[in-house]
Image 1 (tube, helix red, strand yellow):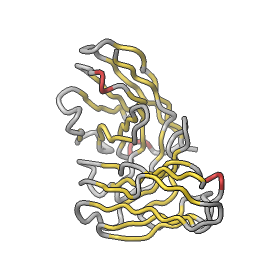
Image 2: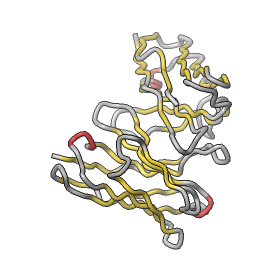
Image 3: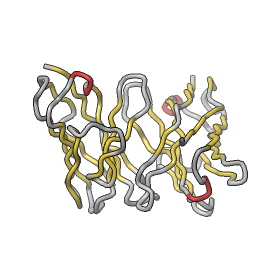
Image 4: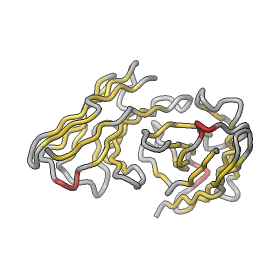
Length: 118
Length: 107
């Protein structure tokens, strides 16, 4: 069974930083691209960042580019999201996802972690 | 790639046929998923690659389309289908996007 467990969320002041972690199990982690998706209260999902299976390529939504950084450790089956210069509008539940891709379209999501910027 | 979902909300009776549409701003071939989300829950994958039913999802759900226009159909709406539905394109890992959502409730 695929399991994705996020941690590191919480309350932070505007301009502050936070690092989210996601521990993966139940699949061959190094074979899959991973992503972070967020959902602000009462809004739809918004893709934030993605990283290729090897970690060579990183991609970001325009809204977070230059402030957020995605990384992964294939030896630890983990993916991370470093969030700097946080803004009130970054407040959301952040989901770790085994990304849907052309090769592997069936994505999987964690339970999410709440980040509140206030 | 922009994903335009319509309608943004709808009310239907139990047993009705419900259709939700998602239009992509450019050709995404078949690379589209549909999700169901209930309040306080994680989005649940219903359809992948535009028309493939995810394991365990009732057969009243179906997806169709390719290129730029896609549809999610519920052939006979049940009360447990009350939720918000989202489309998601993954043609390009550089810029994944979701539709704005369609809220479905019972008339």
